[in-house]
Image (cartoon, rainbow over all chains, first blue to last red; front, top):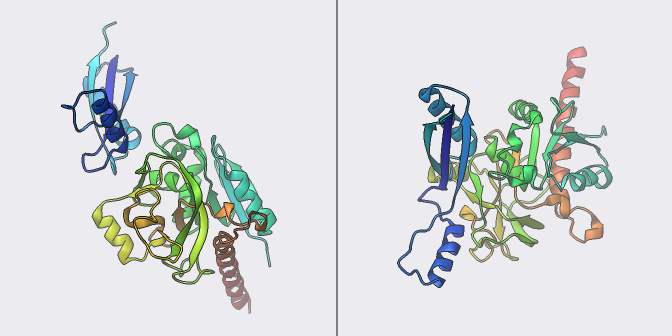
Amino acid sequence: MYHSKVFVTLKKSILDPQGKAVEQGIHSLGFDAVGDVRIGKYIEMDMDTNSREDAERMTKEISDKLLANLVMESYSFTTEPVKE
Amino acid sequence: MVKVKIGVIVFPGSNCDHDAHYVAETIMGQDARLIWHKEGSIGDVDVVVLPGGFSYGDYLRCGAIARFSPVMKDVVRFAHNGGLVIGICNGFQVLTEAGLLPGVLLRNKSLLFICKYLHLRVENAHTKFTHRCESGEILEIPIAHGEGNYFTDPETLKQLEDDQRIVFRYCDRSGKVTDDANPNGSLSNIAGIINKTGNVLGMMPHPERASDPVLKHTDGRKIFESMIQSVNSQLQRAESLVAERSL
């Protein structure tokens, strides 16, 4: 069994108004050193396979076709075996 | 005149489906039917409406899950065969997710859900959806969305502009396309676009909410009238072809 963690964020070139709003909140909280706050999505999933290659291929295909819209988003992921 | 068959797709979370059905049937006098998203086929309809709402609760991204609904396969087939498809609001989002229209609809720049009447300029009145309008005509039709900020890459935008596929732009009362008249941050004030072959239209404003005279605004009817007339003239052409051949 493998476990994937997928992180989806808006591309750098796209304005992230939600991130901007949260950044304002962080500044109001007194953390002036913080900048470039981006909001994204985090998805995790288990995969019933014993092959890392298989698990990574599935994660990539699912991310490309469903989890991220590549017109506006980019993603990264990690895949690790689950200790049984 | 034969009634035009207008199918309105119902996704879980659609909420403008009955409005679209009401306008098609009661206001326009056509044969309207609701099509549940689990159907494998849209049947023999002439026009498909993907209505507004929050299909699948907008989970993941607006329209992202709806495009995998069983009925969408047949909608894509229908569109590729030249059938008329109009996506309104959430329907527009579904069309971009399904790859039938380019680009994507981002969160409104203001982060606010905006629900109000505003003005649109008809940029292309030579489409199957707008030929009942004048070129440059200003329509007053409401929007109601949180994600209507149209975005695409510069090459696609240029192609849309060159091919006159930007059908509606947000404008002010006098028809000027300005930043102030742009409610959501849409690229180039885009409110609606059409596909290359001219049979798939996506628009964020709601023509079905501006069609019943009781609501005082009826500019949206022109879009329904255009579609209905397009189908009718297509049917007539087909009939006269058959008649010619049988002579």
